[in-house]
Amino acid sequence: MKKHRNDPLSWESDVLQSSPSSTFILHQPLGGRQIFTANPQNVEHILKTQFPIYQKGSYFTSVLRDLLGHGIFNVDGQEWKFQRQVASHAFNTKSLRKFVEQVVDFEVTDRLIPILSNAAKKGIVLDLQDILKRFAFDNICKIAFGYDPGCLTPSLPEAPFATAFEEAVEISTERFRNFLSIVWKVQRFFNIGSERKLKKAVSQVKEFAQTLVKQKKKELDNLRGNSLPESNLDLLSRFLISGHGDEQFVNDIVISFILAGRDTTSAALTWFFLLLTKNPNVEDEILKEIKMKKIGDSTELENSVFDEVRHMVYTHASLCESMRFYPPVPVDTKEAMSDDMLPDGTEVKKGMSVTYHLYAMGRSEKLWGKDWPEFKPERWLERVATVAEEEGEWRFVARDPYSYPVFQAGPRICLGKEMAFLQMKRVVAGVLSQFRVVPAVEDGFAPVLFPSLTARMRGGFPVRFVERDGTM
Image (cartoon, rainbow, N blue to C red):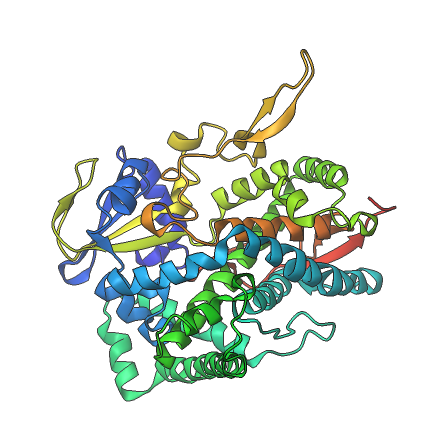
């Protein structure tokens, strides 16, 4: 295992592919054991059938406690249920429409496109991963907290919070890589090494969250006696008026949703644009769809951007196919609260870590067939004939969520799934309708997936933007 430390995902994936049950047990130092599985029956068992048994657990939550505190992605039980219930009201159709038509569309047309256009005219190389993180950060802050950080402005300003957040996530991830947790705990106790850096970074992150919460509280106090319409309540306002007055608790919620809204969608889009550069036939099909929908066409703004984006079927399938290869969260680990038996016969002891491996599942011949290495959006589509003997329109065919648990499944299925797709499709339409994305790398460039909390591309993704001839 040690020699595969720099690329554990590929090593684990190879082992799972060679296992008849798509499951193996990793024996760790001092007698520890961890189960890895890419078996859909096991995934369903973990995420749905025996959901109460498989929780975040003490190990996972202790590793991320300094950064995520008691936010929704780091708690179980009643704490999780309460946060999910409050947050669910922010993902209704009205909120999604507002998100796309007021927040995302502005960020694309007034910020993203001008920056890319300037880079195209001047031949500037941009780190697309960084640009997409800035875009996603602005979006999540606006829709969730009613705050515009302005990270995606022409000067691409330094963002101390974003730098601190990145460092905090990276160091927190390193904790998982220490087979002996005592190593980081000792460093934390004495405030030395990477733990000293983590403490400083987390302090900056929490200061940012605290500022947002205080500003929102002040806004709500000024409106006392004048209740806001349901449609105008952002996520942070909902938590503050829910009766939970613990400021630290609300700070933790802010940090969790920034992680979800900023890092996952930007990671998914980064890998998507990389795969498009290698599959021009897919890009051509997406361009046809964009042209047909006229998304991003300034002469068509009277049409509902929300409705048009929702019906970008081929683009939707392409994003799903991209996330099959590069899921934003490549692995997810639960802790068994009691002894159990997985459907494939694997024995689970109380306290064991059980990891379902999304990265391996997306590369499984058993699940996707012999053509699994092909980037093939059509595997998610079927033709619907409307007139006899004529080729009909594409219809999206969803996969079993336990064979493709990119957005989790069961009770913890991602609340922001539709919001993420709407945002990504609007970005794809805005960018591809005006530019070709050309990697600014040497021949033989092999991107490396950095196994952090999300699937980042190590070193970023340097690209050039080339304006397309004519308008779409």
